[in-house]
Amino acid sequence: MVAKTISDQRDDERATLERLGGALETAQKELGRLWQLHEAKFGGEGEYLRDGAFTDAGLKRLRHFFGEGKKNVELARFFGVSDSAIAYQRKKWELQMANV
Image 1 (cartoon, rainbow, N blue to C red):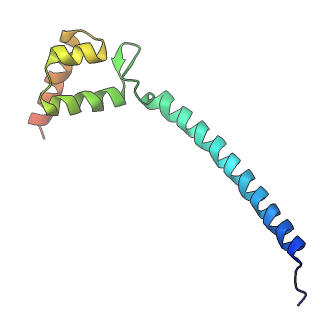
Image 2: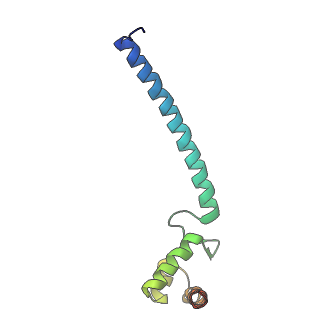
Image 3: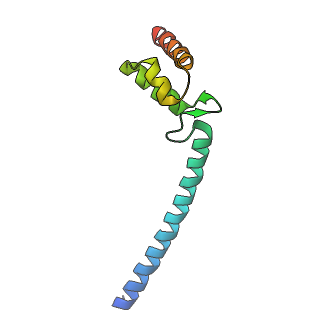
């Protein structure tokens, strides 16, 4: 067995690091693509309304607030919608909770 010189070992390490860097870049690009698909389907993080309707993230946040007992007026102000929109969603949530 031939012993590798320090220079050969460094070259091998450099080549390995370059391969890992390439794999990491590929993984980051794929993650970005998948995140865009996720946001298109479910809405972005912090995006609670789209086209006048609550996104899945918005409904999740809204139901969390309902569980905390927040008032409709506070929620309407937070989400930037009318009190009646919050009241409608609260009624739906209460009916769902009653049927569980």
